[in-house]
Image (cartoon, rainbow over all chains, first blue to last red; front, side):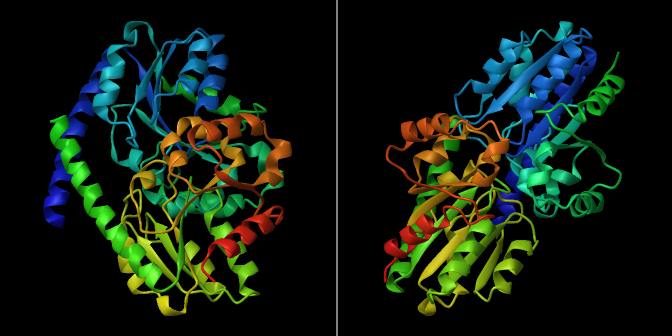
Length: 220
Length: 220
């Protein structure tokens, strides 16, 4: 029973990986840099996307957004739409992660030839999104300091697969018992030398370093 | 393809429900009140359990705890153990929720005849735990205010199935843009009249009402 189950899961992941490669090829053809943005519910995914759009608008960087939601609510998609960027919402219908076929369908609806950057906002969850490649170039996780300093220890799989870590809501640090050294030790153990930005989407502190990295990393 | 998939999922949930009924029967035989405690990562599940144990210890209420973790880390289980209560850890091995068979196995390892209350700490996730009954008597969700006031709108399934809602970390409200009316409207729409406690596990504010409810609800 267990063996059979494992075989089925492996086949699903194999099929997903093939589609993810196809998505990557398509993004590359259009010289688009794409991010898979993951986090717990309420860690600040949409806030980071909005802050990034606002800052890069001045530099005429066209950004497309794919919004993953587990329910048919357009709260986040409406916020992106309101700042004039193309956005496609994926309603997973209760599924707890995005997969490559959902992203493929969303890419069909974005004006790829006109975009420099695509940000995929994954479903708010630290577990399932870690297993499914989407074809994006960079796995970015937002850790929100009110969640506590033990999250790398408790959700190691998602930290292992990251390219970039963002520590958000640092404006709340004075009011929390958050041991930054303990947190960073946990991260270092799982993903040595991981590129990390500590910032606050609310106050803007630390955003500059993230934006500079993004500008330097995306194809010009 | 979709029909077949739905059939398989329904069969899994049917089998889970049967086992959940068996767990419920066993809990009732032992006059135990059991809670399925759900939340996002870092919302304060273990903190609430510890605060509840500390308060009820004085009143000689023996509490067993089942700790659901997605990785083999004993951070939370160690904290419960340190206060002298029996605790069983379930490592789901990457699975994003507990199910009835995991809880059945955990119940085997608890001294049921000596317990009044069992608290099951589900995996930190707002999506998948909503679909799997465990046999517990009460579904309790902790919403943490730093996660934002839009969570009921974005994760409606988990709110629909709740018996009790706890709004935690209210000590942080002065530093957040959290619209309590908007949050409560979302909850009311999904689960009218839901029993709700606003509290802070850190300062102790509001804990009394939760503890009184628990004392009044569990079999004496």
